[in-house]
Every structure is written in C-alpha cells, then in structure tokens.
Image (spheres, rainbow, N blue to C red):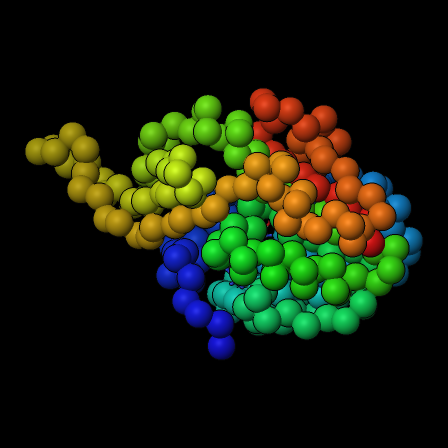
Length: 254
Ligand SMILES: C[S@@+](CC[C@H](N)C(=O)[O-])C[C@H]1O[C@@H](n2cnc3c(N)ncnc32)[C@H](O)[C@@H]1O
C-alpha cells in the first residue's frame, strides 16, 4: 500500500462533496472531442482514464465506442461513474486503485490524466506516476495530460473564492508557496447567516496541497527521449500555450 499523501484526506472526504460543481459532463464532452481528434483515435480503441473521478470523460469516450478503463481510489466517485455509465448505456471497466500502483503493460491506444490530477505526491513519485502512463501505452499510443498553468496561476490566484454548491456556499482560501511551487487551499462550508451574524460560521471541510509544475518541468518529467513527439497546448481545445493560458496540456506520442 503506498504512503499517505498530503491531500489524501481532502480527496477521500471533501472532494466528493464538491466534485460535480467543479467538473461537468458538458465540459467533458467537448474535451473528449478535441482529445480523440488530436490522438486520431480509431474506432474501438482502448483508453485509460486515470484518475477518472465520477467518470465524466470515461463515459464520453465510451459513448464514442472506445473501450475505457477508469482508475480512481475513491469508491464514492467510482460508484457515481458506475451509475452514470449505466444510465448512458455505456460499459466501462472501473478499477479502485491508487494511481501510483497502476500496472498496465502496453495495453492502451490513449491514456489521459485530466483536470489537475498530477502533483499530488512528492516530485519523485509524480514522475513515477507519469512513467506508469508511458508503460500503459502501446507503441504509437498517445498520452494527454491537462493541468493548471502554474505561471498563469502565480499571477492570478485570488486569495479567496466562493462558489455555490447545491444550496450552500463553499469558501476557498488559496495560497501559493513560491519556494516549493505548491498551491495550498483550505476549503470551508459557510453556514447560513442569521439575524445576529451577517455572515454565518464556517466549517473547514478539507485542506489540499498540489505541486504545480511549469511547462518545462513537466516536459522534463515526461522524459522526452522516450516519446517520438511532445506538444504543448493552453487548453483541451487546441489553444496555444502561453503565460496567460489557464491550462497546461501536454500531448505525447509514444
Ligand atoms: C480533480 S479530480 C479529477 C477527476 C477526473 N479526471 C475529472 O476530470 O473529473 C482528481 C481525482 O483524483 C482522485 N485521486 C486523488 N488521489 C488519488 C490517488 N492517489 N490514486 C487514485 N486516485 C486519486 C480523486 O479521487 C479525484 O477523483
């Protein structure tokens, strides 16, 4: 069993309460259109989606007729994926596993790691996770990694954000440590205001810490000599990568 990591508790307890507000099925459908076109995916291709969360990309890929394996360590999220796949009439292989333990030898035509799902561990461990994606791909297979653009975030991260979540308000306290490139967030559930208190009390629901990599760090982490081609984008729609792009997307051909 791999070691506990900094944000493990956050992902097991807090994230499933809010994941569906941040990540939507609608975005997933457009993401998948672009991903399958850049990867020139053929009908019935084998795809690895890790971590897959509640399965929004896996289901879209399944709808297109691809054979998808989704990996996540959250039973709550996988249960949601199972139900949504059933409703969509899509068959998925869902595996409850830590992504650090993935062992798929040269099986997939496409592997995806989407929506800031890298940087959860120490740098060496993150690199090993990236290696596992490389191993999982057949020769000629394509890897798509999508995460926050660190250099854009450094200049634009608001110290506080609020978001409505199914009738309650989520408050996020953000900070970025320039010495470690780690984005820390404290996630609060705001209680209803009362006549006495204009703003209700707040309950801390989780704390996350994610290492954000610059484009050159992530490119190096991929071990570029292993891939025949690596391209950078600023979003899952082909936006060019720049300082101002909110996302950093790497597409690599094995
Ligand atoms: C930000 S979400 C992204 C999920 C999905 N890719 C999407 O776009 O909706 C991150 C996911 O990583 C999962 N996760 C976090 N740490 C993990 C680990 N060590 N092994 C497997 N899954 C993990 C969480 O349960 C969560 O579903």
